[in-house]
Length: 188
Image (cartoon, rainbow, N blue to C red; front, side, top):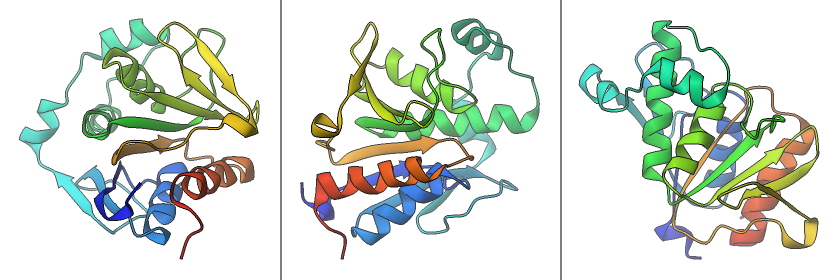
């Protein structure tokens, strides 16, 4: 894949999103980080601050998200804005890559889980690196399929979304770096 045609859509938050951005930069890939006024981010390359009207375009019922994900999301303005920016990240990408933990009910832990669920609803290729299981998983449309090191995901679309936990472990960081190396070759 030609890195000059590739774009990473993320949020620039500390942890997985910042690492996706750092890998994109090392490989010469454009970054777009959706955020909102006052949100703490670590990546400042390609920042796109969403205004109130734009955030409203990504709004979703917290009752719906809570029901879909089998857990309660509080109605705080910050949580709502994070979910709204995730809508932009997932909507913009053709393939979705998430670093987190897959729960027994098939959802992904935390706010990142909404990004994974939204990708499922949009029928987008979805891959999750589960830091606890130390493996990549692909969503088949019905269940998670474990990927081995020999068939780990490879980026095949130019517009990708990368999101995930703020608690990035060494294996998650390595998974992101390996994903970019498999897909684009050694970084410059």
